[in-house]
Amino acid sequence: MIQQTDKTLIGVDDVCDFFCVGPNTVKRWNVKMGLPIDRIQQPSGKMIWSVRPLAARLWAETWLEGENNGPAPFQIKGFWALCEYLQVEPETFKCWYETEGLPVELHLGSDNQKAWIANKEVLDNWLENKRTA
Image (cartoon, rainbow, N blue to C red):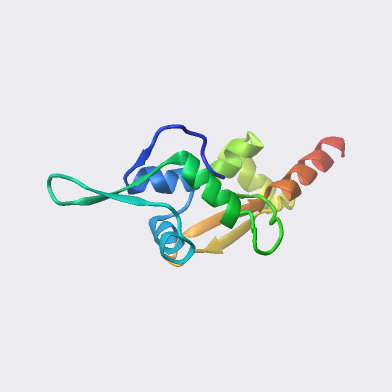
């Protein structure tokens, strides 16, 4: 889930938080898919990332929504983003996942970290069915 902000994203942490992904994914998107990252050289010589939110949102609409393959389902990525979207505590999320079939997927990322992903439309339908059951 892309975060909503109007301030320029400065540094790897801001950029990764904006897209709810890790730095390796952001680097891959930049190299292979043209994510518009500016590199700013600090007085110390260190390079930092800078991304303008509007440019990032437009890029995401093109690439992450699947422009080349028709519209892809909107996905929510990350444990905390999913908890926030569902408006539940982590314990409830885990309980729903383990006992009630919460439709989320757990992937192992390239950096061997767990990544929770869910389709927004599928989650909405699941919640609606849960409420009416």
